[in-house]
Image 1: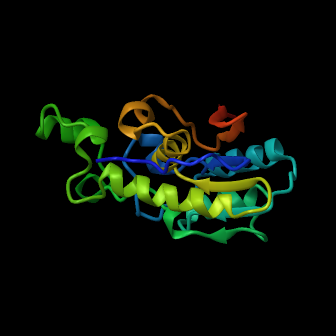
Image 2: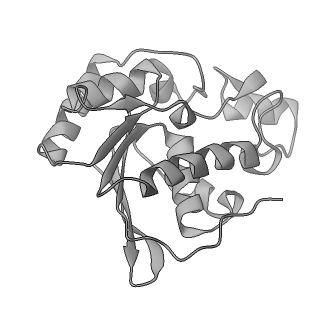
Length: 198
């Protein structure tokens, strides 16, 4: 059963940057551990993300080790300060890797990624545990943190931040490629300060 850590939130700000466009993000195929490069359009998106960030300073910059996130980080101007964090890798989709949701629904009527998880892949709870590990690392930093990662992982991380089961909220958090979101704190509550800015 999913649970989140119950604690008074430390004052913190976590910026979330999703990687730029790849062939599979464009086609809608599930891209977990397949290490695809950015498309030319994804490179342009990463440059736009860099302009949006405008050289802002962060106390810690972490990136998924997968090249689409790491390259987005580099192009956006943070490659020289970023550290790879394995828990920022995308959801391990198992038998769903490279496939469309519609394909699996045709084979298994009623199947839902958020409810059932991918066959032979990680469960929602396993991904949430990884996301919480990242949050714990962010809370050790002495100031704002910037993360470069992936669509589903970042949606789950946002849910873990505010203490809501990802099964309930994450499917409703659209997250575009090369978008920027901010998790923050308002008084004594963790909040989603801004979401899916491009």
